[in-house]
Amino acid sequence: MAETLKKGSRVTGAAREELAADLKRKYESGASIRALAEETGRSYGFVHRMLRESEVNLRGRGGATRGKKSAAS
Image (cartoon, rainbow, N blue to C red; front, side):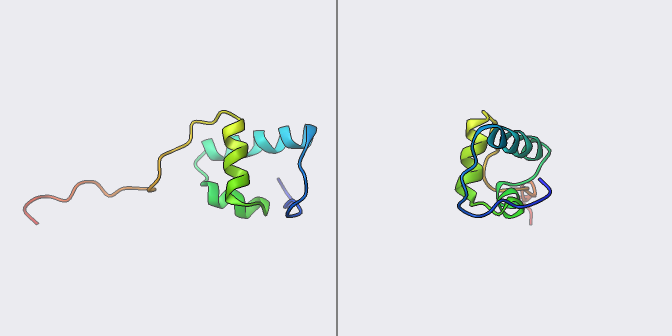
C-alpha cells in the first residue's frame, strides 16, 4: 500500500480484498498489527478485523521473549 487510506473511509469490494491480502502478507512476514495500522492510517481494531476476516492465525501477545532467567542469578 503505497498511500495511506483516508481515515474513516469505507473500504469495499476489490479494494478491501486487495488491502486484506496486503495486510495478511505483511503480518505473516512479521509486521505487527500496530505497525500495519500506522502504515495504513487505520485503527488497530480495523487491521485486526481485516486479518481475522482473512483467516490469519494471529500471534500471541508479548513480542519477543528473552528466555528463562537462571535460578542462580
